[in-house]
Length: 94
Image (tube, rainbow, N blue to C red; front, top):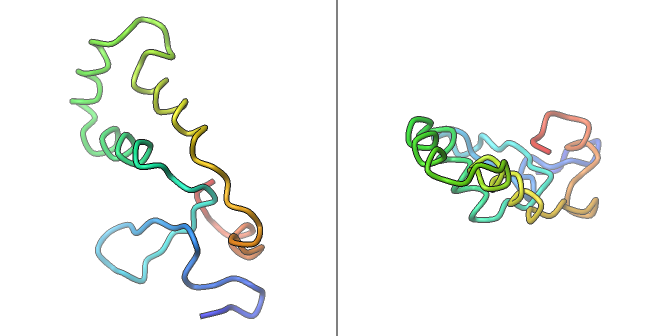
């Protein structure tokens, strides 16, 4: 469904939060499988994330947060052809 100002109710890249299938949160990046998996692990399993993180290297780049931030660089930004101006002006994950 198109909106009068050029957006859609079904964004090209989006997340579903919860079980309501019409609940689509626009995302400005294509999230890689690694980034998505790490983000879910960090948000839903924080104790395990911290426990595993303590076994890694001492430099920030060697920590889980450092690895997740580096993986974000692999999540390319969606071009304007696929991310409507209305989606850009509204709430979205960037």
